Image 1: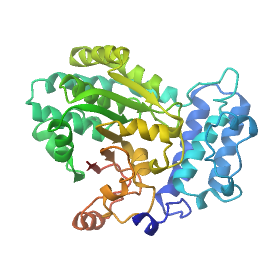
Image 2: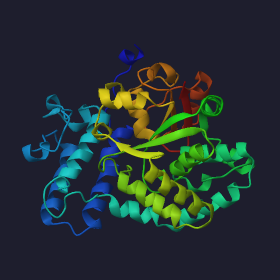
Image 3: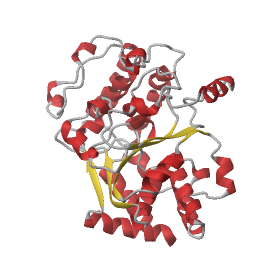
Image 4: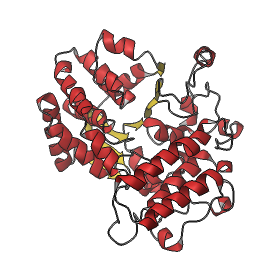
Length: 386
């Protein structure tokens, strides 16, 4: 197994990207969560304790009351007492966010139960003027040839919240997406256009501006007959900062309906398709855990196994799909995803160290740029395993 040759990524090295996540990004995040709402002193103190522990302390356990809400035994007791940086990065990041929910009393009975700590940020992004501009571009896209429309919808879903690339078609989009460093888009097109239509699943990534193009793409699959039904898998509760929940998806559908023009038409169709079940919103506790997809429970595996295609969106899903390990960038995507129960396509903008499925020439040319190409968000991949 290739997996045996690649160690798991950790955050021990101060020069590494994972170290910067804990020491540069998380302090900003904690401050935002602590101040966006008028939180009581106990919550602010708990957030401060979490930040101190995760940057300079050792792993401590969730308390007994909190664990009563935890259906999975994945918060590894063997990691307790270790410095956070010595635990696997995927696990440590997940545990950080689980502890953050504990600090803001998300699972506890009381006034703060079920209140999304990232809700203010998500709402502000969805209401932004940039979203209006992006959705207005759908009106121009309607007059384009079918192939250009398809490329634009896939490209917008791939690049997520890069407003300069949203729903673009034609020469402008071609030059703007030069950061695509692995491109199986022909294989993706073939899976959806050349065979019989089936049920397509999408593993959602972020809410707000990123789930909007995903919803537009799913609407297109249904409207064009490329899928008989679609299933959008979201998180059962807040997880990483912007991860999409059911509430976030419904807010995005409402944003589309209120936008006017073609966006409103798409939003109206999506609203009805959720009601009729042609667009199913699904979730599972496994999506809020630190395990890779080869360890998914039987029921979820069987559910995804009925898909004619599963589209995996974003960086976290990609890490869970191929394994959060120090792969050589030429490690084959098809081999690393052989465990997945359906044909799978990954649409991913690179924002962490994991990179696979590249040619040797491409990897060498990227290294020669001197850029942090794995983590700076300038590059993307479309990988497909049929």
